[in-house]
Length: 478
Image 1: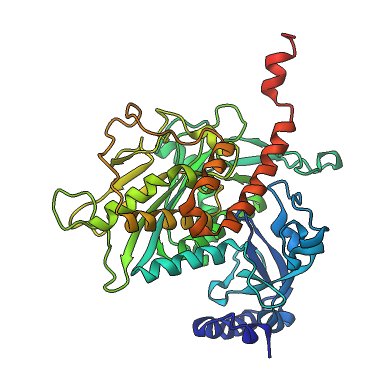
Image 2 (image 1 turned 90 degrees about the vertical axis):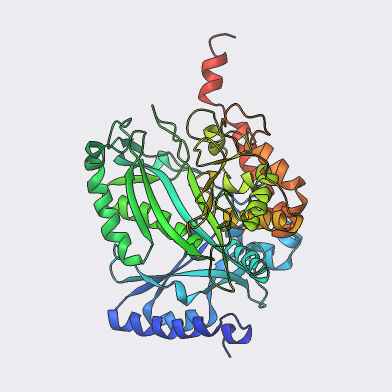
């Protein structure tokens, strides 16, 4: 009996998809299939399996080292894995032992840009049949199941801002290696500052053409391609998908965009604010609503003409506000992302909501008779792990429903409204997350402590670096 059968790792739909996947690999003559999972940072990791070994890999998984779950964004292992319990208090994590990637065959794709290559998204299991508790896709799936018990599906549409530069020097000489290595030298595609002009769009259309051509066959809900305000800044929007679909799409979009464009001599980055002259910050705006399972209707649409949200949407909004500061650690998980929270730059800086106002954190759109009624969270950065970002929103929203929280009046003058500010640093956001009882309960206290430990290691490394600011501030003065 295979691992998948022994531990009931697949449902009926996944079993059927696995058979179709094997048939398609044979029919297309694919040579390898990439087995990938999204790690704690939302970065895809995995192995490429030869087509001849695919049936066995699907049935019994593909082994990986558990140290992949112990790394920060420099890829350094920040838990003492060679001590008893591996720093996790778990025998399964000790000594860099193996875990298994078990594919979700419903996510199978053929990669247009990689010859004879398929791709499938996985979740991680220990060899003894226990699910790995730090798997962020599984965590999000569990939160979605709790939402379903309340009678709702989560729908999410995405606005993704990012930068694309021409690659000048990839910095691949031996002295450029390290953890992390030297970032590449790049050049602009446009000088920016002509938001949505056709002239600027045409200048970057060769890049957009590459993305359209290579991403369309993946089945992503591509909706629009736009030139953003800053130099070499782009935006792509994805239509709404239910459940894990939108989070999976975000993971695949980011990884695919970086791979495809690198093959054509470009560097795509989802870093919020690159350290380049005149660079603008990038956000990731998450449009969210609830769909009633009973009838498929949007649960946020109000019945009264002058109401902005239904009662369900109103209390959901209240929950998002109540837990906003703690959720920021998951919507903005890098030190860099907090440089975006400033007034008068179309970015939020405080915990407020407003009716169709781009200066607030939570923007309410739609109303009576509008099936697209939704809440747009403008706090996120494009580097966020989508599974954790979504899960934080659902946990917060469910608490708002349970306690019937009132979000208060709309902030029509967002930068003059008195309200709590968003965390100014990642450290402040982590402290809010650690102290938030609803998120600790909804995500698991063990997971919250694990996530914060990894992020605290990044902060510690940052604090040991001598920055350009320090050199400029003190070197001549003292």
